[in-house]
Length: 219
Image (cartoon, rainbow, N blue to C red; front, top):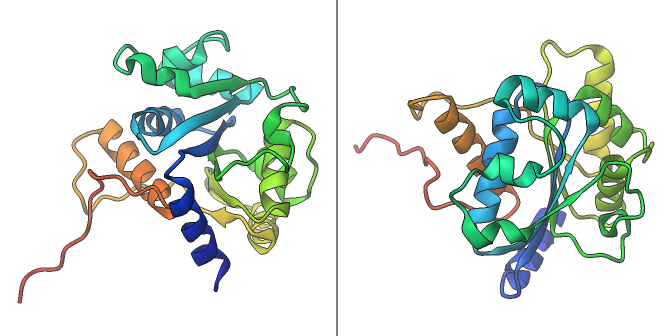
């Protein structure tokens, strides 16, 4: 059985008691994707715990792109007012909290998504630096053979970026560049980001009911 099939089967059995997902936000452009990921995970009844870690650099991007400022109450700022008690699923962690639960392999996390993933974070993960909680949590996913999705965001890629993506992929991560689809004719930027998030979640065993599915013309 392949690692992907084994992971998917394990996640299906875990869904009965609820899934735990780590979402890391780093300092690359694309804050809207992070916001839509938080909102989708919170709304998904199969997910019972979301560990949210925002890097220091991500806070500046969030402020510039979403007008969301500061680390305090970040979860509520990203969610808005629509999610009620479901927002209690989110546990916000500081990137400096290297002793947090997700830094240990004995603490079960079903999947980790880094969205967006900066080239600096990619480098730290690919080279095993583990210098902060995001890098350490990703390192744990790799060594424990858990799903790790790196939604890299940069243009163009240098040879250093490409090599780091290769290293991370060889270690077990999935490189999932922030490349939105257009064939589904998204109405706006939010719809485009949401469909990208749906595709990422389908990749970790959390397909979303409103995800666009390509259908060939009838013959």
